[in-house]
Image 1 (cartoon, helix red, strand yellow):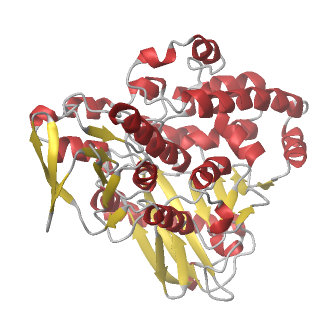
Image 2 (cartoon, helix red, strand yellow):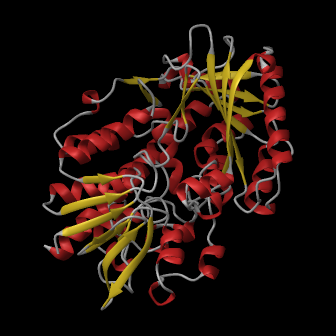
Length: 488
């Protein structure tokens, strides 16, 4: 039981493979694409370098713990910069604010919105820290194979601190009256797959991560993370094999005995699927071995897909920061469009990143711009709608920054729902995984260990702990620890 095949070279797959190799297993990792890192990838063209996937570096201690487990630190791979301001927000009253990295300055800002709010913020974030410490501590490292994992006295006692049955929106609105404060505190969960009114108050821990732990950036781009994880896997003798999409598996006596790619068949004692859970379950396994039917998947609430625009601009744009949130249209209307009505938003909220504000990712005197528009994963890609969104977002950015640049765009690349499906086998083209709703938390997520195949395990954004880079790192460790426990 020492030969392990890990399928999928994203962050969770690289994490699982590295830990398993450290624990003494012989590990091969199969990746369908050319690059390792999954959604962390870069795109270079005409002197511009773009982070194509994740662009927010939060919870730096989770990354640091991973590196430390292999006798490294982040500084061995990249310089980590805390962004100040953390980001910029454009509001619907035609104002904008740079969101301070310094906590006292942040309190002054929200005090300007609502008198007395800084006192409530201290209490709110003290509670959020408890949720962060508990949620990202003893709770998050459970494989969540059953509810019984959570019946230990200390876990039950601490579970009451998590406010699982109250929404984050309710929690925020009880403490603050000002709409800008509501949006600032709700934004970290907005793009993770459900309306704030349907997201448990547990996720106020994201506010703690944002406001107290800070927004960071690895010099050289987010792809430096993928390079670091690949280096650690190789140093631990993981055999990394790219351009190797899994086409089928052979199952004997309720065990996967071999895995077939286009050119090769690999034998395995143990298998970890770190690719898209739905794709592997429905398209690689025979019906009798599938954990969930299509009705199950259709009833899950998925995070949005996105329309992404990568632009090289032949001028500087002074009125934007590294991270920018355009919250200058109706917050609820966009939420309804993508989370309830499955329609194209008419006036969407969107996110804009310019890493060229911090890094050398564009030629001198130029900017690289990354625009992300969240969309319902249940709406098929329509070229005319993508073109409308592009024109609409550019016009709005120009209007709000008072800077014309559309005619200065000298490079453009688009990435849509169809690309998420083609490149990552992403179910419905979702960008982040399952939404963080109460009924999709912990043991209510798709199982980490198959009940139908004895040597098959899963990790990644569709199982525990959930979507995002830090949870994906932890998912790889959780599955590796589970395998070591069950097979040592």
